[in-house]
Length: 158
Image 1 (cartoon, rainbow, N blue to C red):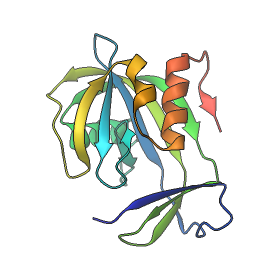
Image 2 (cartoon, rainbow, N blue to C red):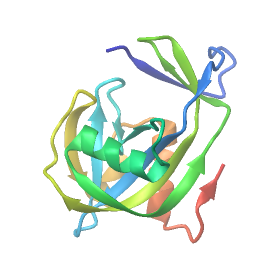
Image 3 (cartoon, rainbow, N blue to C red):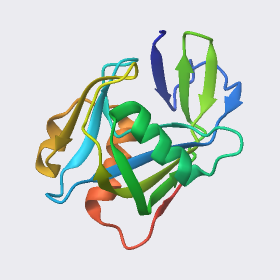
C-alpha cells in the first residue's frame, strides 16, 4: 500500500487528476464517543470514510466504508457538511492519483458490531470528544470533526 499525502494551498503540489465523491461518517455511541481510526496510509486519526462506488448513494457509501474500515454498523442521521476545497489535494502514491477534495460528512448512530481493524485502519477506538484535540490528524479532518463538535445549526458548505 502506498502513502497518502495531503496538500493545502501548496503551490508545489501536483495538479489534480481526479475528483472522487467520498463520504466520511462521524459515528457516535450512546456515551457520545466518536468512532475513530488510525489510518494505515498516513498514520493520522480520522473518522471512517472513502470513495463512492458506481450505483451507490453517498449515505450508503458512508455506511459501507464504516463497516469495511471498522467492523461497526451505523445508521446515517444527519449532515455535518460538504467539503470541496480545490486547494486541498490528496496524492495517493500507490497509483499517482491526485484528487481534489470532495467529501460529504455525515453523522450516524452506532447500531451494532465490534470495532475491528482492517487493511485501512491500524487501530479503531471510541474516543471521547474531549480527547479529540490530543490526536494527530490532518487539517481537513480536524476541521470536519471540529464542525461536528461545534453542533452547527446548519451544515458547513465549502
